[in-house]
Amino acid sequence: MKSIIYLFRKTVVLHQRPRLIEEHEEIYEAIKARDGQAAKQLMENHLQADLDFCLHILSSTNYKS
Image (cartoon, rainbow, N blue to C red; front, top):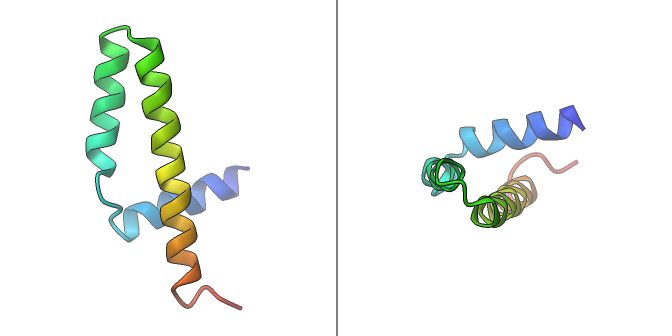
């Protein structure tokens, strides 16, 4: 699992996934406001966006075997 997380993290940063920083700020603000439901939803959306982005990058680059 750590390897997958590391791969996702490196991929989204290296390929500059749009809205990455803004999503972190929104999650932080929801936590700061003690809005657990919003924080949960924002985090789920964030993780899904990371997954979608990574799959797109991996399928469209030289990572193919």
